[in-house]
Image (cartoon, rainbow, N blue to C red; front, top):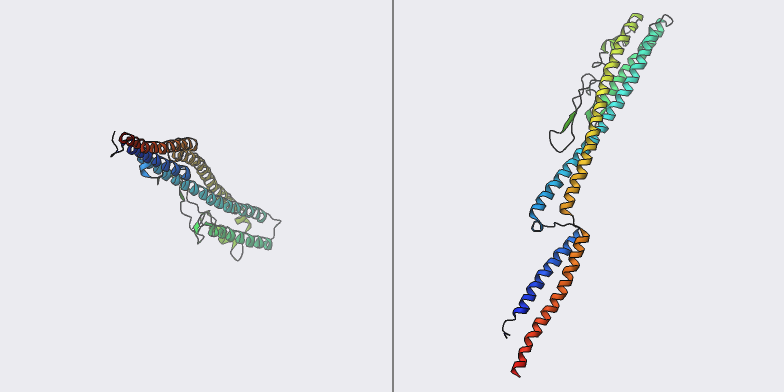
Length: 282
């Protein structure tokens, strides 16, 4: 029997150290809720989980972009809806002016109404913006708004575009009507008849703009719904890799805890066993 080196005690201490390390790791996982807290826990799993997290974050931003785009498109559509109401009123005014029951002074009053309505139509185009970006007309009320491009997805190529919109008297070819209505003599009976087809064409063009905005909104809403499904699935995939299974980890912790207690007992027994050598000296 050897007493200078207690191999049994050293072996028990080594096992106890390993067990305590496992307990420490288990407690770290239980307290953080994560199966991977550092690269050494699962290097390849960490790389995959981080990539999935980045993907989920990017998709989430794409969803936010989409919701913002929907708001922008709704603002544009509501503004053009009011412009459409204005054109309806102007059409009615022209019909009123194109009848012999309306006097010359009455036509002059109608002209003033039409001029103010066209001015308001331009005002709506100039004032309609989202975060400072013009939506349906240039800020000068003459040129058109730029094409709107939305990134709805995680890639730079995941974009949805609208057509350029020019919802003002210039873009709707109402400049001639605006000039006649704003003149000293106002709109004549013949002009009232002629400009009705001009207003009809403007209404058709404005409805085309609105149809493009509406179809773009439907496309964006569909893209957002698809992204929401992707985000859920990608997040779930990351969770499987990164998040701890509490039932499994609790069972592992309890197991290691019991082993640790048994190891302490084993160290005690290994140390006391060497004392039996003293009996040989008695």
